[in-house]
Length: 370
Ligand code: GLY
Image (cartoon, rainbow, N blue to C red; front, side):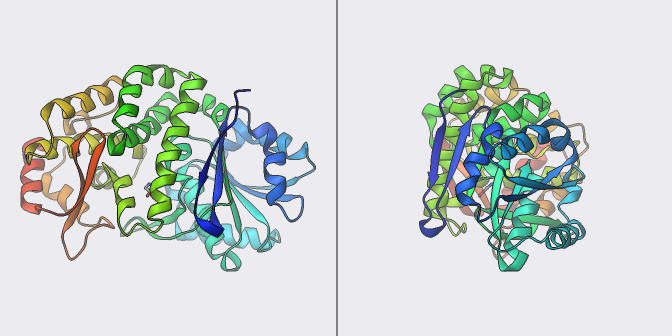
């Protein structure tokens, strides 16, 4: 076992730790025991995670006498719905969850977002911990308290800020993930370098290939650096009234592509974010904020990792007007103005609140050719 890394998310009474290491599931009981009022944990997971990792978590809980009740949902974005939320909340109530109990989200972003929202509203807020099992959820969605479901009008439009009491990021759980999911999570890791840490971006240029191949030390370093960066931003702006919007680098463009693909597995969130970050750099070059050399460096790193960085990399016939319409559904739209996270350089991202909508449309027309 590698030495445990720990990052504190300093939010006063709601502060919590993110524990990062390999083989942590085997120790889950000991890690959770101090947070449990009674030796019982309610675990929400999906079928894929259950078949790959449930036995490890169960053994880790049983080692300290913690009894676990599992609720296993279908994998995939469709699970983040009102219908599934209703079913989950009813099932948790039927199992007898009390306000002082802990419910664990054991899975990726879908399970984390749905379970977190269920916990935020169940008995007006019951205990919640995150045990993320994908690279993307370990570096982003399990940290910071954003919880949500999707509605027909758009993704994550109904939700709450609700912080977990602990995050357990077991790097060993990544071993069973398909390479495509690892690459998608890697895009969010690259994001932290691009937002404010040029040295970390340089580290990824050297160590990214080892991380993608499965090197545990590289993964632990990258997850720890990403979580520390996120914790610092969340501590400053928990409810995204300002600086936290930087964490959406690549997301406004990216969400438009996800919407165009119907939020399906044809384009994973991390893949959309990679393309969105490349476009944010290209657009920043277009308006004279950023050097072409930086945009090329970013696209080289993404391409070498097998991630899309041009619209032509997607297998779809997309129109600029449709993409702009999707961008206007973004949560950051204010009085019809598009907020974009743009950049002055690698490691120097900025929130631009009133991006020129017509110019963004022209940029996308030039990129899509229509
Ligand atoms: N994933 C962006 C945020 O947590 O703010």
